[in-house]
Image (cartoon, rainbow, N blue to C red; front, side, top):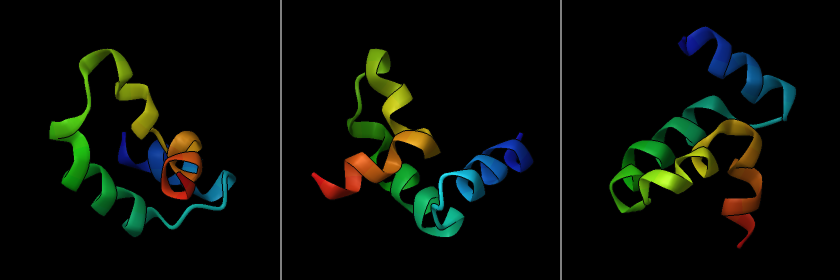
Length: 49
């Protein structure tokens, strides 16, 4: 599973370590129905806002 997430990071030009660190720090604060926002393809928009 991590391989596919890291491959998605590569596809979207996201640093996998920075992304995973962000997810671990912020997962408690996300609503369950918005958990898809933490996926690598959505990470760039989260960081910019």
